[in-house]
Length: 298
Image (cartoon, rainbow, N blue to C red; front, side, top):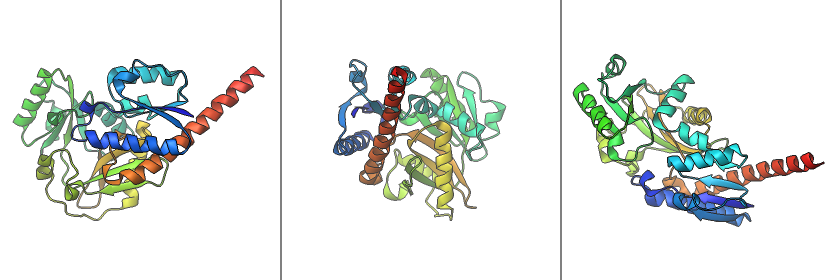
């Protein structure tokens, strides 16, 4: 089996460049141990090389030109993990709309045009502060996810987004509670969750000051896994991670879900699960394609 693997561009790995590269490298090593021939490349070189001998593509890439190319290949029958379509579904606006439309427990949120004053719907969410997040993509810069303690701060932030040519922002109600981060592979028993502030595994220290110290509120860990799996199913992503807020009453709210994260605290175990998952999926899909080809010739 020939597999093409695509690393994530550095600007899409804020504060996690080494971690993102490490999980992909370990997964490739595991796939090689299964007998697969793996070619690892970056996003730029992928756009220049041929893929005619590839049986499947695994990708952490997120750039728009790359995703367009992957969608074309996927539409032509190339197995790709995560699906290029699911990666687009994880862009902030898309994620928010999909999760809310499917009844996922998610903070009350609205999409705000950045060239306009804060809408009435946005203002109605401001009791405990607002999270302002760029709508068109993942967070690349620190300012792409910003907390606003006041309405004036929120207005300033969306005006700054407009100056950066970010046309839409997702504005979400701030939820008080414990932040829990998780990593998973959909359809498997692998699910790793932890309190990121306690192990200093977070992008920006300011977030801890906003959320406050961890209270260890009681919650149903099985329910968190089920909610994460349902969210990943809605978005179509299979190798995923995310964040949730556990409130004082034990209620769980997904606040973020993203495609193929770093898995840094559980990297070695995760790499084995991911590689086994990918090898099984690609083997099954390629056997199906071969059977269909043989049947078509007979």
